[in-house]
Figure 1 (cartoon, helix red, strand yellow):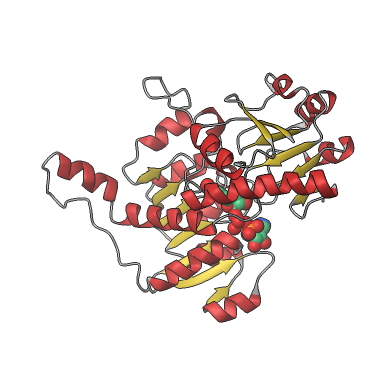
Figure 2: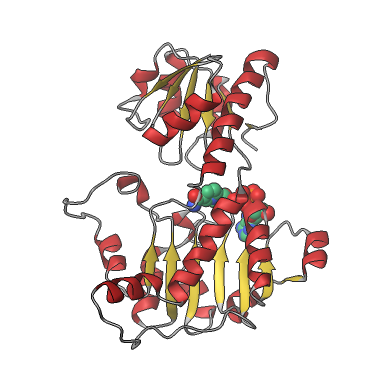
Length: 332
Ligand code: NAD
């Protein structure tokens, strides 16, 4: 199959070329993101391959359809950037990579928790400047603390296992609870409000949907323990950023770790050093000493990239040979 791979980076080329070493597919790597302005680059390609910040809205899908594209292959698990209704109506098949190394995201989540709690980035910078003062670096034992998990899917369950290892008590909220896993793992499902009220650390692992959009808003923050640590490695818009900034200013939120940001499509995955940040909300976040931000890198391990490339090409093979694929998405 001829595949137009949008938003490609050198690491995408490395892992997709490796997965395609027998040359079954012709992959054309396009650096631009897919958008209404770039969709014409896919003309004549039966398949396009996209990532989290490519725009696959109704207009782009219409343009792809006119250009002869019949499959959109997401090299991600999340699919909030695709208009599935329009894709179905146009007969464009959409496939994704539902599960790839949940360990990649789970381990990054825990790296953020430890980095924030023990202030590793600040300590690193201090020591490089021969400042060995411990003032302001005080952390807390994770052992014995209550860890609140929102979303107990592939990634959430791995996070729970790691945090149990630290001796945390785990409470979880998920509208589709996995009771057997909870029993086996000593995790207690509670209502969302109870989780917000009880947790010392809260970590988000649910998808971005109309239900979860701004799930963490001012009212949710109000219910949290003073000094809570909030971690989001899921999708930016689950958190209402301004509400969290207000809570950081009042110390209601004690620390914040984010790998994703509501408006990340204008920032992440590009080297913007030397440019003036135009996003004032993001710029404000950068000023807090108790905020740790990474640029959507939680998935970024060798194992995850190998699995993403292999599953994406397998999805396209299935569509090509059988006309369907187990990882196909439909408008509900
Ligand atoms: P998953 O589908 O296995 O699990 C998601 C869980 O969230 C499910 O158990 C589901 O029932 C639950 N859920 C749905 N609606 C909910 C709600 N309103 N409240 C609480 N829980 C709800 O997905 P996963 O593989 O664990 O991934 C979770 C999310 O992580 C993805 O949706 C994606 O947005 C994000 N992600 C981020 C990165 C990254 O690099 N930062 C990489 C991969 C995935």
